Amino acid sequence: MTGAEQIRLRDDVRKWARELGFEQAGIADCDLSVAESRLKDWLDEGYHGDMDFMAAHGTRRTRPSELVAGTRRVISVRMNYMPARAVGAEDVLANPESAYVARYALGRDYHKVLRKRLETLAQRIRNAVGEFGYRVFTDSAPVMEVELAVKAGTGWRGKHTLLLNREAGSWFFLGEIYTDLDLPVDEPQAEHCGTCTRCIDVCPTKAIIAPYTLDARRCVSYLTIEHKGSIPVELRPLMGNRIYGCDDCQLVCPWNRFAQKSTLPDFEVRHELDASLLVTLFGWDAQAFDRNTRGSAIRRIGHERWLRNIACALGNAPTSPEVLASLRSRADHPSALVREHVAWALERHRERAGSSAGQKG
Image (cartoon, rainbow, N blue to C red):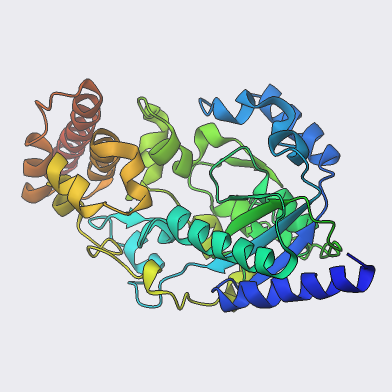
């Protein structure tokens, strides 16, 4: 392709991406050498916890052409996900009897939504230029999504490590097409966090240990989604009513004043997960969990970890006959993991009752 043809194709890719429901698309080169050094330091500190996959792929994560041979450019896209109709996140967090689910997980599994549209975008490119090499990704392989999005000019990395955009905040998903097409690259945006530290200050477990550095081992999203074992006892009270993910750092970010709601039906709230009661969700048996999380990102954690997470939140909830009865119903659960967290929660309520009785005396 001539230079003019490359520019025209880049502009067409941006237009097609918008037509497919993406808010923005940009083009990045494959030089992630600076990010590679930072990733190595992060892994050496053990901040990835038991996410062994973060270290398992060597340099394929930071060298796109090693993951997909022949890759010369990465098309990076973003798509808004905040449901148009959902109970306010702050209201749910303020009610300790309600279950807080990260806003990205209230609707359909984003992997499926973005992957299908990325494939369609690739087909449109093929119709325009003929056969070409490509592969699509949506948080599904060793891909440095935020770093590539930064290079593609779709935003900058915030101090909470997420991508920020001046016109859209951070309530969006990212996706990529690795391609062998030699497209013109976009210019990165300047950073606009300034001296703001709201995301660092609000983190309930103090997982953002420095600007741009997250210790995943303390992060509520990691603890409730990626972590498979027992949640550290000292962190359980800090989790509040968050049972799947955490949005606190996004909720306080000034740039999210400009965030736009999703217009896609895919991301509408399912099964009232925007503000369900903890006791209601704790009552789901394995069949109900499978049925109600079908097609949802939540399903990947499985019923056992679902109960583990909610048991922690119930331990943090106000003591009531309903909460105690709910916990006792799982006290003899077949899973040792569930039993441990239920026992901890019940002990929390016993301690409160003892403290209250002592104060009255």
